[in-house]
Length: 397
Image (cartoon, rainbow, N blue to C red; front, top):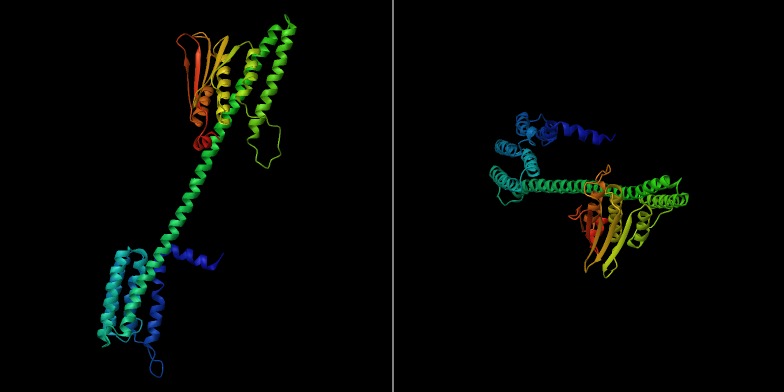
């Protein structure tokens, strides 16, 4: 592990030690400076060294109380400058405190205290050294105080900028993760709808046709053979649609497999013929002028009709169903009605079919209503847009 990182982590856990570190070199340099003579070294002026240590003592809590520490160290350095004007390091402790205040405090407080300290230090230095306030040495002290405050504000601005950038990155990551989870959830719901539609529809037909074949096997082998042929065709269609749906889970670089095309309204005759073969009389009526439909609208209309007929065959004890496609200027109205008897025995449905129809319609900006009719039977009515906006396209996909 890097030594610098270890030291940085250790200091981050020990605030008081980190705050006191700048005082150590100041005290050492003060002792050395007071020991320098004109021709040789002599014993340091311990009084000045002790006073420097006292003025640096408040720095141990400079990160906790930056304003109070700045005022106390300024008072100590001004006193030291008065009684020991020849000490060259004064007001070093005040400069460190001003820098800390600028990095931790507000801009207004930092600059107010910094300017007051700069003027006070300049005035005391000029008075104790009998120099002009605008002299070079006096202005140098003024510049030191202002520079310490300015440097602290620069560091504070950089830290704030890094914190904002880090927050934006974290927000972007969270948003990206949430968006990914949302897309995964929507994709799971969409695939679940497709699987429900395919399995419920084809297995219902296979079950009905198998019952017909079983019933006719001894009395009418020819019709039983025809029913078995329908079972074969229906099961093949189920496998094709399942293969197409599962194929959506593949990655683009996966080996391509056999995928059936997405069902469209042009395939309605094939869908209806399967139900007719199972004993349900289905008629299809088209009104209005047929217009080109968005692929998502065609798929949604096909799946709604498929699910409605499946529910009719499974739960309604109906003998007849009517499909109506009404093309309007902007909407396609899809109606599926049956003649099921009120109070007819219901199968053990889960309710996912009606939920799936509603979700499909809402995804492309349409609506679905379903319920019993006054004169008997059940009706599913959907209103779907002929064309989709960019938003509905993204929702549907």
